[in-house]
Amino acid sequence: MRRLAGLLVVPLLLLSTAACGDDKASDSVSKSGFPAITAGSKFGEKPTLAKGEGDPPKELKTDVISEGDGATLKNGDAIQVNYLGQAWDSTKPFDNSFDRKQPFDLTLGAGMVIQGWDKGLVGKKVGSRVELVIPPDLGYGAQGQGDIKPNATLVFVVDIVKATKIPASAEGTAVAQDNIDLPKVGTKTDGKAPTVTIPKSDPPKKLVSNYVLESKGDVVKETDSVVVNYVGLLWKGSKAFDSTYQTGKTQTFPLAQVTLKGLKNGLVGKKVGSRVLLVIPPDQGFGDEAQQSIPAKSTLVFAVDILAKM
Image 1 (cartoon, rainbow, N blue to C red):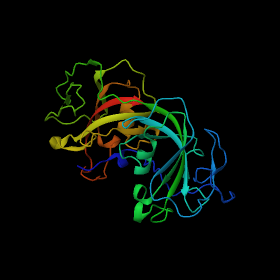
Image 2: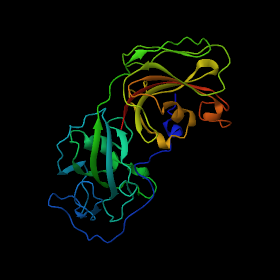
Image 3: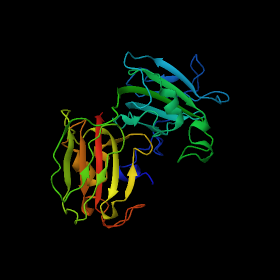
Image 4: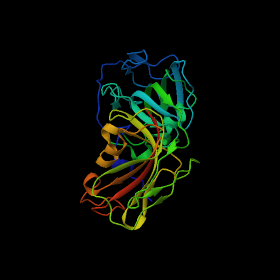
């Protein structure tokens, strides 16, 4: 079963090829041996980094430049960060979130980013500014990425803005599923994938977004990023094409960047902590275009646990 997260949303590449910044910073290193922050040294400010001097370290290095007083990050937390990254031997950033004025969302330890981030941010506190020096084997290795050269050592300044602990399952009041022409979704809250039983009848032609479990959480807005577990199936044949439960890792979707129209429209207005049935007709799904194991003109069925919003 191939993951479809990259098709459901506009990929938020942590290491994009869009370069920014300039070469004005002079080469220097901090007292700790890390490339120095030569401007924008405070948490929340866009930093400027000097070039690293000498041979880069062969192991992951982390330096807490300023420590916050928030919660300590653990694997499985949904976090928001601002960051700037550049290669050890460069003064020109290859990417940063400060210019976009939109923090980057990820689930720590879920493999959503390079290993150096997952390993380097665990144990750090919300509100901290951290500098990471990441060797190639914990970055992009021998293949490189875009403008990042093969076997590049990467340097990041990361501001940890927010963290949310993620529950294992949706909770709430079970809502009657009495329409025999719609799929039935299981209501167990054990953290395992809920059962989804699809009827033999023809699928609906309009988007269906129904509560299975309705919580008392905040209402999801289009500007939110949501942390979800889900299973996705084809109406025809009831074949599962994607599931976060198989990997045991949640997904974080910035709803404003979700490209699957029915997924976005179906989650906006629902309450955090709920389980939702979505039936997405082709015109709000992938339409006439086949995608991986999804044939063209497919009606899609999702059971989504909205675990948190950022």
